[in-house]
Image (cartoon, rainbow, N blue to C red; front, side, top):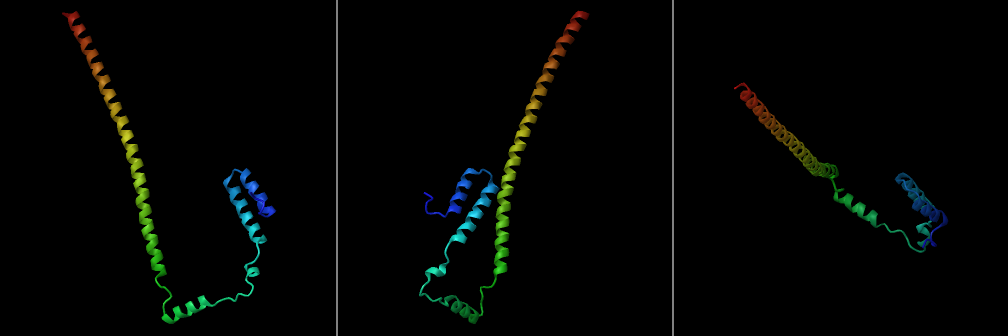
Length: 141
């Protein structure tokens, strides 16, 4: 499967498969990319008989003659940043609001449960005290 790859790249791929840490993988991939670019042939080796065209130069001169280079790049960048910031803020604030709502509902449920348990215990104590009072009144009479 890897027979067509150069030896350094083949070894790096094997190392890549055996390592586990993310930083090591990134380093190995970078080394593999550098090794491939060093081994690869130049494009000029295949460009026999082809002359370089000046298509881009013609386009650039026409744009300069028009007097416009696109313009508004900074405004567009700031606008895109602002819109993406607002959308991101909306998404993240929605997530936080949802988490906080579930947390508060959980806390509120625990508080109500404790309240009802305390009221039940107080009613039991009240009933016990009433029976003790009735017993004492019966003993005095």
